[in-house]
Image 1 (cartoon, rainbow, N blue to C red):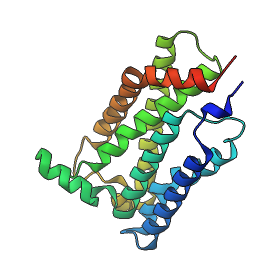
Image 2 (cartoon, rainbow, N blue to C red):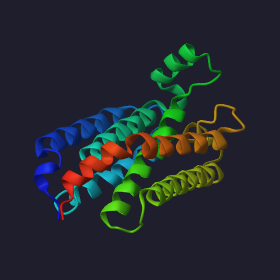
Image 3 (cartoon, rainbow, N blue to C red):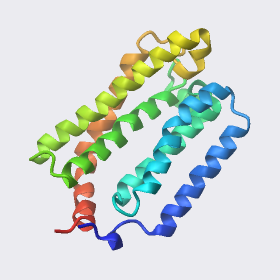
Length: 210
């Protein structure tokens, strides 16, 4: 069963939810491109109601809630400025000496890391797979599938919107943007499994009790 005492404090979750709602509101007042903002924050608008609705019967680990919170802020910031114009990305561009604003790569890294950990938590708690290695492999596969579907969505947006999709795609003239996006998602998923699994296991052991 799930031990609610070992899940994050309710007031912490409410504070995080309020922060995300405020960030959404501020980012939506005057975004650089309204259509791009809506497409970029759509995952947040979908995930928040689901997380609120499942909080009582299926609470997640503190680690996963924290990472989802960070991912939501990454998406919201990217939606407000568009990924190619986020100030943090320009700072990284100067620091790393890259030819383009790399903020979108942060987003795709998170797009691999967080879904991989979500998949790992579901697989372990539901006993859908046996063995930590198999669970890790399947979690990375799930993250890569999500990354691939996101690239297909971007492709569909490009076909439907034409030049209007440039802000959403954020390729910045990089012909290998799709491939590098998926590679960053793979790196994020691999980091989640290789570096966060032990911490995740400890939190799962406290959260889910026989």
